[in-house]
Image (cartoon, rainbow, N blue to C red; front, side):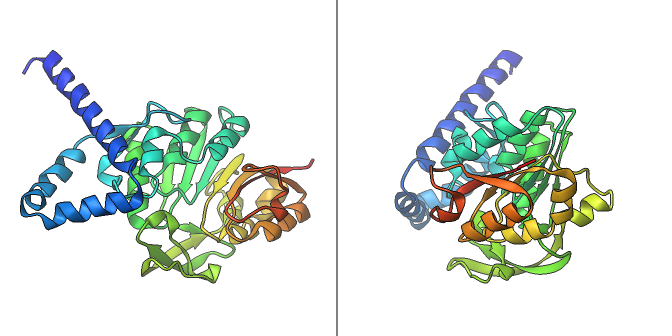
Length: 295
């Protein structure tokens, strides 16, 4: 086949893959589930599903907008029933976090993506810091960490890396409760259990202070933290780093608003609610907060 035709075929199939992803993930969750169950129950469609899955996973899908616009995601690691699949491919995931990163990250910065899931914000950070900077992603769920590694590879981001471990207040081992939708997985030490948790994993836990003080990693300039309730543990494990290096934090809070605001105030940080006008301590749960040094 001539090179021009091969290129045309790649472009056409790429558009079909992207539009199909957009179409399916744009449906309501219950509608997606019903379609998936219907396809599995019909003999003909059930027989075709493995081929369709193989074709879908054959090439990555482009990100249409947002900070990582133009970069790609591995379709082999992007389940169409992922809670945020549509937002990921459209580039519209957590716009307040993207805007905070855009305002705070500079070329040459070191960015930590703590709780990276499949790496959307790892890619965003890598775009912002450029090849002279560095992005370190932390993700304890094995298949999510594999997705981050693949997405880094697909986009040729030599200045980004993935560490398959959790981050907490003390280094060692911990019990990770893995949820069907892996982005909601969380450490058992948060004191809660998601109703859809399906298995427990024994995972490594690192502290930012030990990694930085020991010289294993450079000190961060900016951290994005999304650890499904373990955010206070992450901060407790980086007190020395916060006091010595004064990085900026962008953090999703899960019933920890008041305690997070108080802890950051104790450490000499001011906090801002990225999702509304209310002070962080008085805001509804599930917000994103920006924490910056007062000095």
